[in-house]
Length: 98
Image (cartoon, rainbow, N blue to C red; front, side, top):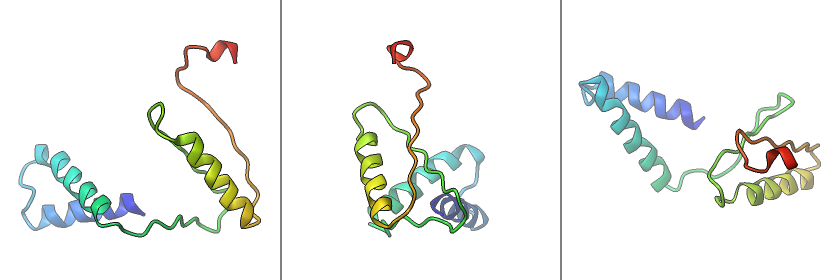
C-alpha cells in the first residue's frame, strides 16, 4: 500500500542518516508524498479478496468525492461486484433536516 511505501521510505532515509531530528520527519514525509504523486505511479485500484472491502472517501467540499464514488460504484458494478453505499458527515449545517 502507499502508506507502507511512505513508512518504508521514511525508515530507509532515517537509517541512512538523511533524517537527523524527529522534527524533520514531517517535511521528509511531504517530500515522499510529492515524489509519489509526481511519478505518475500505478493508478489501479487493487482490493484484497477478503470481503467486505471498505473504501472511505474524505475531502473538502467541491472536491469531487460524490462523482468519484459514483464512478467507482459503476466500475465495480460493471465487474459484477456487489456495491453498497453509505454516507456520513461529521458536520453539516442542515444535517438535522436531512
